[in-house]
View 1 (cartoon, rainbow over the protein chains, first blue to last red):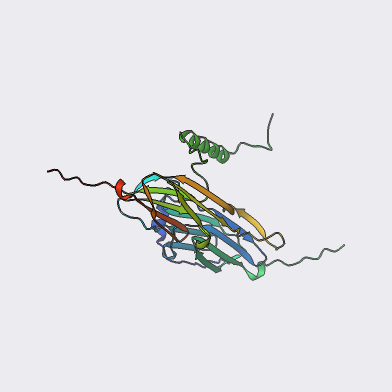
View 2 (spheres, each protein chain N blue to C red):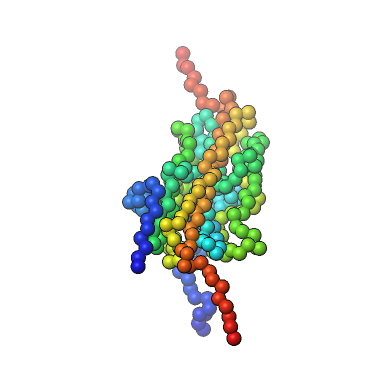
Length: 127
Length: 145
């Protein structure tokens, strides 16, 4: 059995792979029903964010859209690329079909539910 | 003697090397501390009319950000609440890389700025501060008769 459910939300996949990108910092928390991932993507609007999940990988790709006046000359630079990208391997018990994403103030909150059969069961220890 | 508990890790070596190279190139760090690596990350740019500061500070309430400009010194302060669950909740933290807590960053800007002409906007987690240069400091074309 092979689960190949694809979740695709905007973004051009082939163009995104070639370009250098920053690695956004993330927090990943797991509870009984699934995994929550928070990623810092400051400067990325909703329409420039792409979240893709298939059976094995999760790809987060976002491009910044900053308001910049003309004749701008950088004098101090800490963020040196206008793009973020990060790839995660998903484990089998996660259901990429049950994925929700929310972007607020530059923070992406992703929730991936566990497949029904993978939720924890209490195992009785006898003896 | 074999140190099998502490094997050579190529990635760790690379990271250390990268840090050292980075440090070696920071010839004159600012007296106010780390020039890089703090929260929020800052990019500063200038135009003939203004100085533009971009603070990459995602996940804040816009009203809670404290921005002050005093004699060419800009300070940005605030607090970012942790997204992680408390200890009582049944959850496992697998990765924790995002900044949480109070922050305060100060940068020295040029002294030709007009403190009355400052605009600050928070959009998509980026605080954009635009400060106009003083009228007297702006380049001006001089007519030759």
